[in-house]
Amino acid sequence: MTEMEARAQLEDARREKAELDELIAGLEQQVREGDETEAQRALAERYGLQRLAQLRADAAEERVRQAEAAALEERRREAEAAAAADLEILSVDRIADALTAAVDALAELQRLGDARQAAIERHAKTFVELGMSDRIAHRDGGWVVFTAGGGRYDTAQDGCQGKRLVELAGEELVRRGQAEQRAAKGHGPLAPLPHPVTRCIARREAEGKAA
Image (cartoon, rainbow, N blue to C red):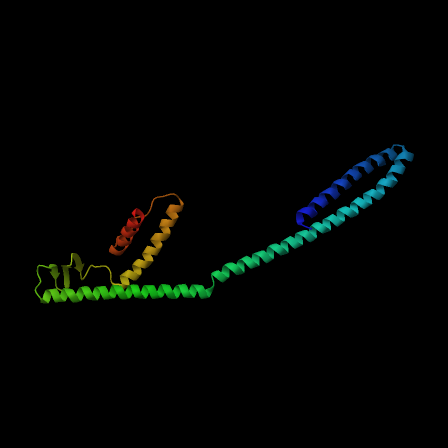
């Protein structure tokens, strides 16, 4: 029996008993007022019905308690199953895989940045040694700015050193979280971070949306 069905039976039993209680109270008042014969006979019948109604109400209350206990136990089982399912998906093993992938990606990002910086410094040195003044836009000691293939490269201010790129990844993660919060509130998008790499990402995303 469901909890709803048990409660419906309990309400019926209580209503039946309440009606009998009211009827018996009226008959008892008649006896007190001297109308004994008919009232006493009716009372004798109603007292038995009243006791039966009380027993039915007690039984209905017990069924409600049992149904409530069963419903609670079912909710507990469902809660445990839901927790187990969610936390299996979000297991430490899966998080460990994600962390490994993230660290590997950051290591690759740092390696690329360091390789780019080394390449810029290496080619700047070559341009200086070869006297390529038409390609050298600025030189101050070891600080060299040069152009090649339509690009402009700066040994001191390129901003793509490995350590800086790892820092930039953390900053971009924060910015994206803020952008999601703004979007949820109906606000416009955040501007990209002021860095060549993040501006490149924003440009490509805009081109993808326009395509």
